[in-house]
Image (cartoon, rainbow, N blue to C red; front, side, top):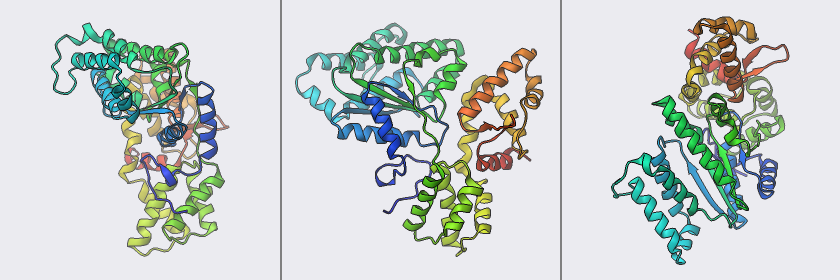
Length: 393
């Protein structure tokens, strides 16, 4: 089977590799009536898994709906996008054409209030907000099997609080409670999947909103085991006709990557393949070592820097910890990290709390891991090499 090397973007079809049992398990939970949130670190493949579940639901005759909020920053923009994607679904088109007069009336009422298309906003948003959300709730048919995937939810939530913290928190609280109420409609056959490259659980914990997700089941998406990682690298070498011995594959998997995310495997293969084609470089351990050094300078890893903006008041704490740990192969103790960030706070208790929350977030997001000695170190040598190259000089 030939597969394409797609590093970073969601994969579908035959390019979806090695997650068959995971999909079966997630689908069983969905059929049992659970809503799912993927609390996994970034680049694990959450969106790819979500899209695969959408495809499976479609094949099972379910209605499906997929919404990516990466470029959405406001409530009214969310509602416009929601309506736009809803109207693009074939099942929705059939529903409206079957004479659903009440639904058509509700839809037009929402469009008028949010200024959809060429319509003008006639009333101040704050005064119609509750009515709009209530109307939006009525558009969804809870009597039909439906799977809705919301991607990059935390990006929207972070945007809501970025300009005005107090008002933004009120907006986010209202929005998350609205989603919670949607999920808890009695007898609803709608199931929800939430995934985001910025941790939803982290965001809710920071702002005291974890209760808004307490009805959603955490579904872990881990890295590949070593066998699956080897098979992926072998499949890529076969598909691109790049000679790669089992010994070399073992070297890459065992000695270099270690945290076996499909993304990292695809990323290093891309660099190796480029060198192989453009420079006629043979595939040796030395060539692999060189490719990893090249990888530390590539822009694909910049997201690990950029996403820290979503840590809000803990961004400075996170950066100080990462800058220090990047210099050390063995990582750093909690006491040492507290010493490094203590001057950011007037009170040691505040420093302790901030460090605890920050370390938890960095672990959840895949930056760090706590080893058996109690030290915090980078979970991936790739990210450590990138971080040290960018911020260690």
